[in-house]
Image (cartoon, rainbow, N blue to C red; front, side, top):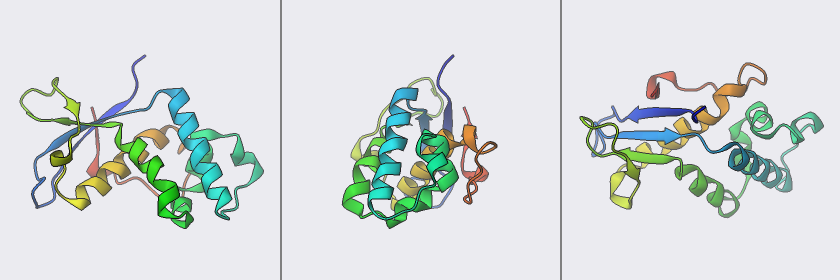
Length: 147
């Protein structure tokens, strides 16, 4: 079975309006490692994580809420954010959605677009767990659409 994907088309006014991106779920092993690093980084910065969430990987991160990372110094969370953006590719020509390529710096020109791409990436990875371990942060369904 293929990994989950979603497309995100920028609708906000600005230089990125109309650009379309493909976000692909991390492989299970990478996603588990990412979530474990995020949880342990948060814990090392004083975020209290209940014992039952420690071994839950992405489910635990979902239950804890991505906002827990806001208590982590930026230099510790930046590698996690950078890895997250590795899930994002650009669809340079919307009339040919089968052609995607990795992002280059000029593909995203607005800060808001980067933030929405991060949010959509987190939503893609955590949606599976929301029913079992609801988060206090709901996804923005209007900004993403399944591919």
